[in-house]
Length: 135
Image (cartoon, rainbow, N blue to C red; front, side):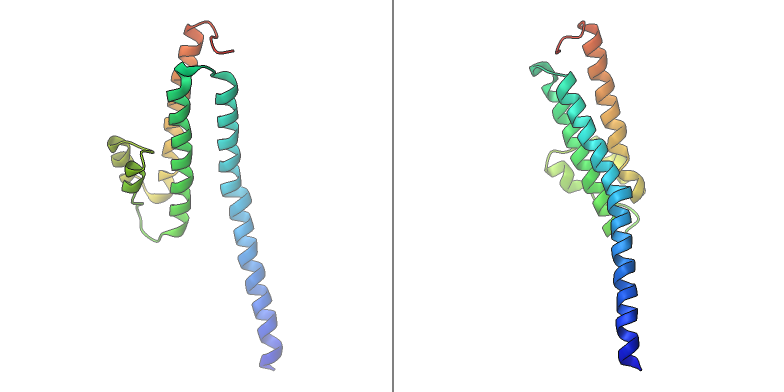
């Protein structure tokens, strides 16, 4: 009797685990990665020239930071995420580390997107002020 139940229970467990992983991949990480690719392509296409290099680099670092934080939030049981290594790897500065430390783990991955939008907004202002220089 037990030999007949174990394969069924194992199949249900594997199916549930794969379904959860796929939902996370498509609905969570997939959307974040799509937004990241779209942002990088837009920045690369619109903001050309060496005067936009710092802003594009900053946006790229914030995108990587967001993905790392999202991955950590899903992997840890802690209420907050330790992000001091992101500072050591030059993704964020000390002030940004303090901001992330004050955030609950699932909100911390969204904070870099606020920074991304702030940088993009400044780049657009510079772009408009210079008459569309870069196209």
